[in-house]
Amino acid sequence: MQILNWNSLNPAQQTRALQRPGTDTDAATTAMVRKILATVRKDGDAAVRNYTQRFDGQTVAQTRVPAAQLQQAWQQLPEIQKTYMRRACDNIKSFHQAQIPQPLAVEVEPGLVCQRLIRPIERVGIYVPGGSAPLFSSLFMAAIPAKLAGVGSCIVASPPGKDGKIAPVVLAAASLCELDEVYCMGGAQAIAAMGFGTTNIPRVDKVFGPGNQWVSEAKSQISQSPGGPAIDLPAGPSEVMVLADADANAKWVAADLLSQAEHDPLAQVILLADCWQTAEQIEQQTKRQLALLPRADIARAAMQNASFIVVDTAKQMLEIINTYAPEHLILQLQNPRDLLADIQNAGSIFIGAFTPEALGDYASGTNHVLPTSGAARAYSGLGVESFVKYISLQEASFAALQNLGPVVMELANMETLDAHARAVAVRLQEIP
Image (cartoon, rainbow, N blue to C red; front, side, top):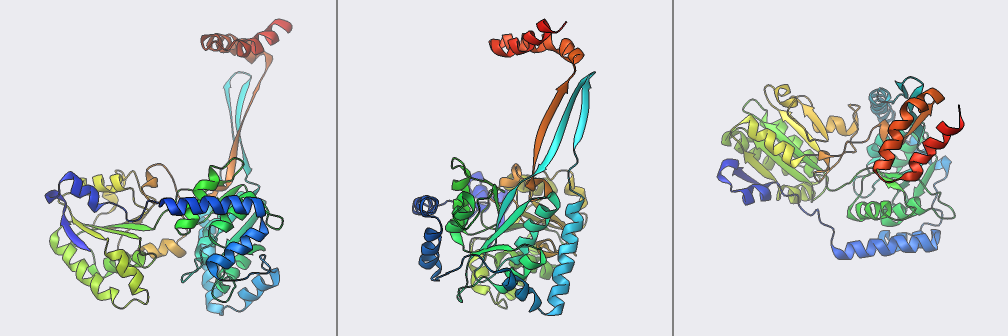
């Protein structure tokens, strides 16, 4: 980590200070993912098994996890964990239930009604990363809004661990969410199987969930394939930007920074401080706490790319926020709401000393599947609307057609689309 004075940097140095590490997919990964997608599309289940053996070192004879194993995983959890998982789900459900979109109808002119209909996506796939930190909470963040939206079927994919099985806590989370289609597969091959379908794995219409570079690249490629599924949003390494002033608790700010750094060596950590002393205090606390973390090696690698930036004014803070468009934005300021109206680009905002980012990661109720890599300039995080489609409808009476038809015919003629104009004219000519 390094402390930088923003006003002492030239434009090129300012750009480097905000540069995200490792966001470009190398050509070899792109080519390999393309090959995996093509092979799974051609060879189906056999290809999934082969790639699981190759990349995960596991032979999975039965990809689908029996429902009894899901229930067993839930039953074997300690009661306190069950209670807290239920509470997190209740909060997520409460917040997302308020998001359920409603149909609308507008009579735009007499006799001409336009409507917007809402239909759930029929089938979705949810990817849950495994590895050293099985992210069962990501399953909650996709499954709960999917259920509220009325999605007909949700299937889950998660990679096998060293024992050849999905992490029990992920299976327990699936059971809690009342999902029974869970498949033991990971990586690009899992995205391909869900996106294209196999003999034993149904094809989905949209793929959700975070993942590593292979998963992200597979989602990107498959969404561009003819007949391929849609995806939730562009995804990259996780990131946090923290704004801190002299009133901020340095110990707490450091804990927030490290909670993001422990995700991934490529995680991005940026601090915007109002003075050099604030930045130094937080730096000292960060170093002290880093040594105590079980995942210190991962967090340390991420912190090597961290930027602690000293700025002079709130205006500068806002300019940096909106340029960078952080996934997570924490405001550890005396008057944080004073900035809200001018913050245009952020995935999720955490206000005040008592709102750590971890709250939103698990149990506040907001969704933690958020746009990264600057995509917050145009994308939102997951919500109920991510799992529905809108269908427009219009119905005109003859009187409405008589009234609006000449307008349409003239506009069509202006574009030299004669058949469009004729589709109106034949009706007006034949009906007295």
